[in-house]
Amino acid sequence: MRETRRQTFDEVDLLLDNARLRDELEPYRDESIDPSINRMPLHAENEYLASMLAWERAPALPIAEWFNPPLDLMPPDSLSDAQLSSLLNKTIERLFSKNIVLRCTDHLSDRELYMIVYRDILPCCEKMVDVPGKAIEWMCVEDTETWLRYYASAVERRRYQEERGMPLPAAETPPYRRQLPGQ
Image (cartoon, rainbow, N blue to C red; front, side, top):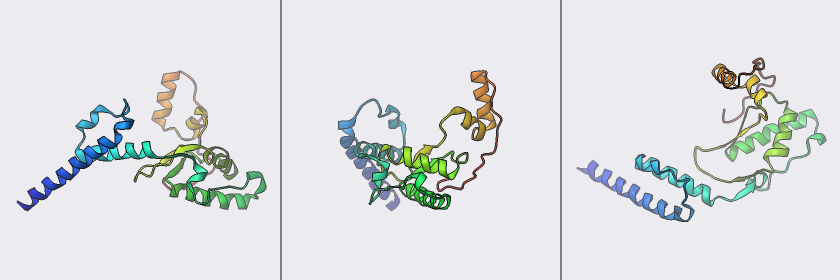
């Protein structure tokens, strides 16, 4: 009897949270709210709605400004290789602390990766959303050939070749193996 009563209270709490979340999302409502969410379990629907609300309310800021003080890196050409590598590793850890995960970096030297962080990632305006378990994944590969060469699986390579009818670059092991946070 007690367990059934507790389950009822839990379900009532979930229903109340769901109603509150739907009310708070009403000003933002458009076709992006998937009608299939009504087929989700209530706790999953609430998580989905809460993440949408967090997204809608989050400010869009340059990633450098997500930090206090703002993350301001030295220009790459002003650093020795040792200084740059050390600063790159610290910066990658700081980015990860804000749920920013770098992907496909093993084809880049430290200097090349630092340049991407300095030139592309830090000035990029993104929604600063803090949703547990969610991260911004920054793909550090800029062209299909590099992805095919270093990162595509055999299945992905075969599918790409079948769809495009083009010869593929030889598959290679990336030259700068890294173990980054979040991998």
